[in-house]
Length: 157
Image (cartoon, rainbow, N blue to C red):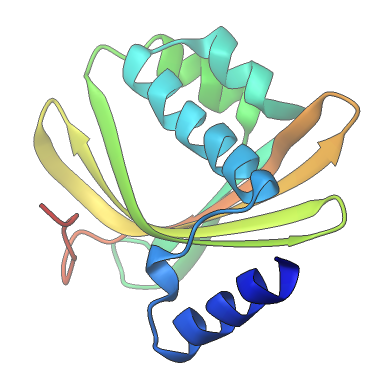
């Protein structure tokens, strides 16, 4: 059975159909954390957000300033969770084209995203999540993202 599964995986990968492949148990668990973060954002649930992060997790947002210079802004995830919990606007970050990589207790997830604020497009980019698997499961310890308002892609229908 193992060789049949391996052979099928090689065949599917060789045909360029890897986005349709089934996720492993670890990949599904990692994506559940990532998707849980966006569910908590939509619900403005700061406590649910905090439960998904390590204690010292951080968000690094990259982009350009008003003069077009590259910038990186670091925000502790505790502050991010507080800001989301007190937001007055409805935030809906939609993700697609997920790529999950796992080695031992480290996982990386790369996704395209588009953020909508009160159902209006705000910006797009790429989110790169880093997760650690500890005694209490997978937790996000860092998110890095790009942010752009022009030349954006939109989520598939």
